Image (cartoon, rainbow over all chains, first blue to last red):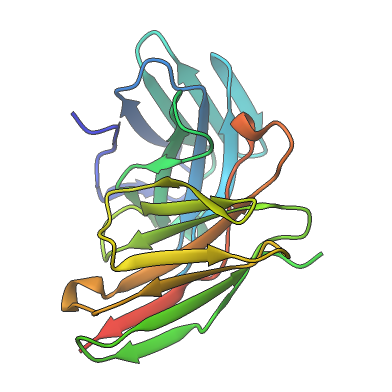
Length: 112
Length: 115
């Protein structure tokens, strides 16, 4: 089982809709979770960090963490064409300093 | 406040050659991690440097080596380049405070093409 699993997509949503991106992980002891956005040909950009079970909101973005079910999700409200990018789920496993492990990413397409 | 800077931005090398990539961390950060990202894949961890020592290493051969300097900047060296080494190489730095929760901040990356 991969450490971090994401559906590669593409996930297509109409402009103004809610985009829901999901991620599951195998290490039950993982503590820190991150969502990064990556535009084509560019480097990853941090969107959200979440460390506790529940929801964390920042503007149009909401991260949700459920440690019992080992999944983390990202909701994007009022999706805009500029949100079209690959979204990378990442986590810091229990063991090992600061190594951060990434999923393969989900490509999001927001259709105008 | 300068973010993470990497150089060069693009590089074209021939199989068998050697390459050195450079990274300066964000101000206030002391830990540097290097990642390789192939097309369509997520970043893969190469290694991490802290206090001028390699603290952790991913599943990469010894052809990949690195160094961290007293000013926290870092280099990634790849010897005997293979076609499969063509990728985007990402440098990321992180804060020394609350290290378990500190996110990575990435530079713009170096696009390496091996022909």
